[in-house]
Image (cartoon, rainbow over all chains, first blue to last red; front, side, top):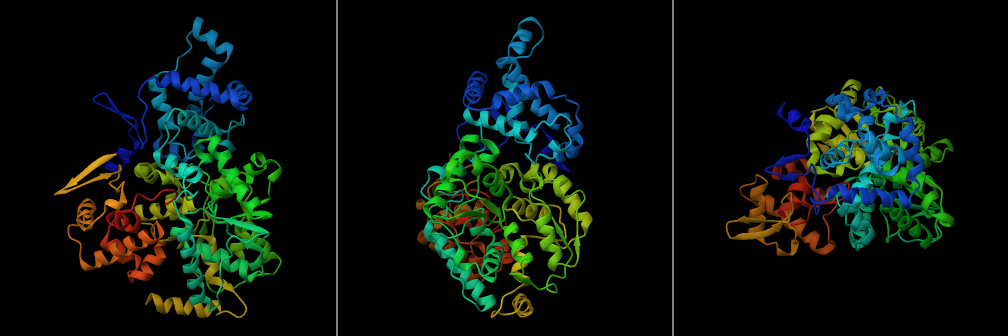
Length: 479
Length: 105
C-alpha cells in the first residue's frame, strides 16, 4: 500500500529549496526555465508545421474530459491532472498566451495566465506520466491527438535539457556513438550473438542456419529492437526459422553499421526521430536492400512505417512488420505450423504503436488462430487496447518503476488476470519488458512471450527435427 | 556523478550505483559493489558468474545475451537470481563492473 501512495504522490518535489526531478536528468536546469522554454517553443514553431495544428487545437480542445475514462493512468489515480485534456491544455494555454494575438491581448486586459516555474514543473511531470498510448484519441470528439501533444511538450522540454537521462543517453549512442545502437552493442558482440543463435537453432532443429550479415542486394534488411540481441533469443530465432522455412534465407540480411530499429525520437524529439530514421534508411541504401523488415517491436515498426516515407525522400523503402511477413508466408502455404504443440491458454497484448491506427490488429490473430487452440482475448483489445504501462519510452526509465507498476500498468495487469491465460503474447520489446515486470509485481500466473517464440516451437521445417521431437527434447532438458 | 566509498575502495558510480569507469574494476571493487546489492559475501558460484561476465565484457565490450550467460556458466536463470537478487543485468553485471545497460534493457 505504501508503494501505491508513493507512486501517486506528485513526482516533482522540493526538498529544502533543492528541486528533485521525477527522473534522472543529465544536467538539470534550474535557472530561467520559463524564458528558455518559451525560446525553445518559438524555435520549434519557426522550424516546424506545428503552428496550424496548435491553432486548430486551441479552438477545438473542448476540455470535455471524455478522454478521462479512456486513460489507464487516470483510471488508476483518479487525479484530474492525469486527464489527457488537462495535460494538453498546459501546452495549449502557453501557446495561446505567448504565440497568438488573442492570448496576448487577453493576458494584458483580462485574466490570462502566464507561464510559471510551477507550470514547467507540472509539464515535466505530467508529460512523463503519459505513456503516449493514444487511447484517448479514439474517444476525443474533436480529434485532438493528445499523444502528439505529449511528444511536442517533451520535445520542447528536451530542448532546454529536461529529458530522462535513459532516453537521452540511448539516442546519443545511436546517433553519435561508436556502435550506432541504443544498447551499445559492438559489431563483434553482434557477430558472437548471431553465432550463438545459430548454434542454438542447430542444437534444436538439427539444421544449421548462418545469419546473413552485410549481404548486398537482398530483398529485406532486418532491424529489431536491438535489445532483443541481449534479451530475446527465442523471438529472434523464431524470426529466423520463418525466413528459412519460407525459402527466403537468401533474401534477407542484417547490416552491421546499423542494426537497431529502436527510435526514441518518436517519444520525445522530432529531431532525433528524423535523424534516426535517416540513419536506418542509409543502411538499407548502403546494402542496396529493397524493403525494411522490422522485428517484434511496436514503436520501431510505427516510427519506420510512418516516418520513413516522411524523412527519407527519394530513398524511401516499404516497411513491413515481421508479423505481416509471417502471415503472408502462412497464407501462401510457405510455412507450416503444428497445431498440437502449444496447448496452454494464450492471450495477445496489442502494442499501442502498431494497433491504435488499426495497422497490425488482425494479422497476429490470424497467425495465432492458425496454430493455437486455446486463444482468449483481453477486453478491450485491438484498436481499443490498454497500454502495458511502459509506453512512450517510460519502460526504459527504471527510476519510475513504482509508477509503471502501480499506475501505468494497473489496467493491463487486471486484464491479463481476467483472461486466465498461461501465456501472454506481446510482440514488442518495450511491452515485453514492462509486462514481465508486471507479471512478477502482481504475481500473475503466466509468462510473457513473443509471437515468434511460439512459432519457433511449432514450426515444421522439412529435413529438420519435428516440432514434437523438439518439444520432447526441451521437456527432457527442463527436467 | 557520485563517488561510492566502501572500506578502502573509492569509485565513480552513476545514480544507480553502476561503475562509470569499468576499467577501474578489481576484485575488491566487486566486493564493494556486491555490498550494495545485498550480497554480503561472494561465493565461488558468484565469482564464476562475475568472472565469466568480466571476460566476456573485455572481449566483446558488452554483456552477453542472457541465454548465453546461463548456458556457458551452467546456471539457470533462477540460479542467477538466487545469486544476485536484482537479476543478471542489474545485479550480476553491476558487480562485474559493467556500466548500466541502456535502451530497452
